Amino acid sequence: MTDLFAALGLVLAIEGVLFAGFPGAAKRASANVVATPESVLRTIGLVSALVGVIIVWFVRG
Image (cartoon, rainbow, N blue to C red; front, side, top):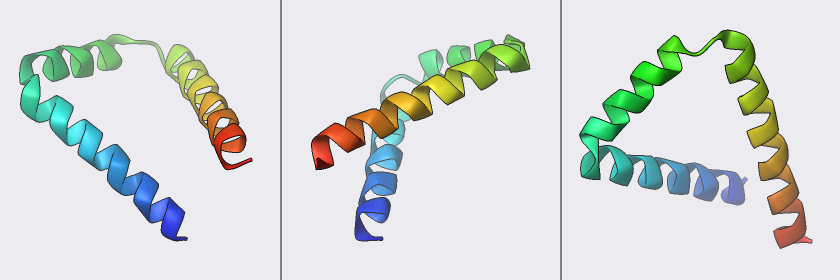
């Protein structure tokens, strides 16, 4: 459970830095997400989740 909270904290820290450092790019990215079809977003989300699991699997062994 500790690893889950550490990972969540890392995600929030990285996103916070991106929004604080590049607010214009974050707004454009958000607008692009709204304009993207749901099927594409679903596919991107599934692929991202799979890549994340594979990375954790290799790192944690």
